Length: 78
Image 1 (cartoon, rainbow, N blue to C red):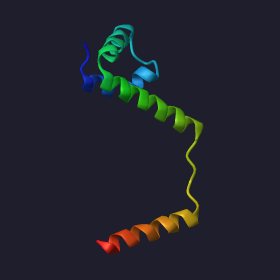
Image 2 (cartoon, rainbow, N blue to C red; image 1 turned 90 degrees about the vertical axis):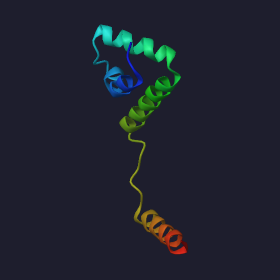
Image 3 (tube, helix red, strand yellow; image 1 turned 120 degrees about the vertical axis):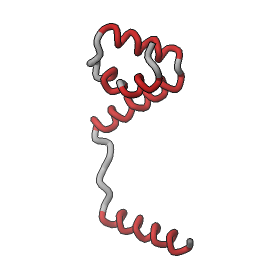
């Protein structure tokens, strides 16, 4: 049986269907019993889907300047 460490290390290979038959079986068995690794693989899959759809946009110059100003305000108050 795979450990959580091995499951996390092979998460992308699992999602990309690059694991051999027995390693895939071990991965599925581990995911059946480990809620934390199931969550991790689910989040990893969601991240891959979002990135592949290009749902992230480059911020405008105005947004960048606004964030810089807000950051400076926070830092100057400390």
